[in-house]
Structures are given as structure tokens and as C-alpha cells.
Length: 115
Length: 116
Image (cartoon, rainbow over all chains, first blue to last red; front, side, top):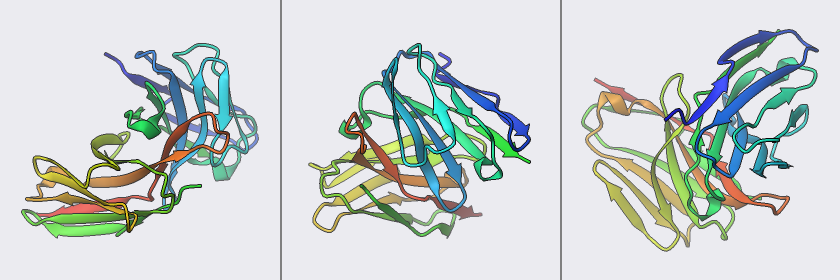
């Protein structure tokens, strides 16, 4: 049972380049999320998706683009990377909406450094 | 929107002692409060959760208490062990601004250090 897998796990890129972080889940969960984790800020939601072809902004969406053409995949693209986007990115999923008590499952994270 | 405050940011306790981490939330409509543990280099994992119709929940050495009136909840770890060393996040349920779903707002995390 693979769960959620993220790739790449580690990436160094240059300012201005486009970067895509991949996320794949094997549970057929409806909901998927992208969070970024920064020291002093905890986990902040970037984008989420309630189902295929349905996405919406979270707390910090600027500079990011997402898509969800298939239920199991939820890629995150940084269109023109900036140093402020250096962070650890976590993909997550849940079967139903989490507010009613459904567990969010996190991937292992993607460490991104923008130089 | 929901705001979750978590204290302390770092907590160091002697092995075998108890550890308590506290969180407050702002939205009285929040009704679900999970706690996540994150080990170095890993993603967060759910360790315990509590719903608003319950005041306390226990699972072996871990317990969570909820005070809805005061809008605060706490994680209690007894008989701490070296493997309890990690970052712990509290969270509260929240309705996303788009209205399309509800989800979680996280606290900023507590780095728990167990001293041998």
C-alpha cells in the first residue's frame, strides 16, 4: 500500500525557472491538498481539490498553479520560482472533508531550494 | 477565518516526565481537533483527535482535553520516552473561504525534546 508519494523529494532550482512537484495517491481519496512548511509558520495551505477538475485556493496560493485531471494525481507548479518559495512542500489527501473528522494523510515531503 | 495558537514552541522534559502542549482556537464553529506528530524528515502523522462533543480522550500514554467554552485544547503525554521526541502540531477544523469544503487550520508546532 503505497499511500501518498511525492516526487522529487529534493530539488534545487534557479530563480525564474518553472518547477513541478508531483503527488500521487493510491487510495482514491476525493480530497487532496498542498501545504508548505516554513520555520515559524507551521503548515500553510496552498491549494486544495475536492475532486477531479475541482480546485480552490488556500491561504498562500500566489505564485502556484495546480491541476487535477485524475483523482489520484495533484501536481503543484511554481511558474517562476522565487527564493521565498524555498520550503518543504507536503501533499496530503483525505477521503472526505476533514472538518467533520476525516483524517488527513500526508506524504513524505518535497524539499525545494530556490537559488 | 480560524486562527490556532500553539504553545510552547519548544518543550524540553526529562525522560519519564509528562509533557503538555496547549492550543487555542478562535472559531466557535470548529468541531474537530486533531494532533499530528512529525518526525525528522517525515510528513505529519495523526496521533489522536477529539470532537467537540467530548471533553477528553485517551489512548495509552497520550490524552487530549478540550474546553469549548474557553476555546482551548491540550495534548498530554505521560511517561515520556526518547521516541516521543518530534514536532507536534495541533489543528482545528475550519471552513475554507471558497465554501467548497472544510478542512484544518494548523498551529505553528511544538518541538518536544526528551532528555535522557
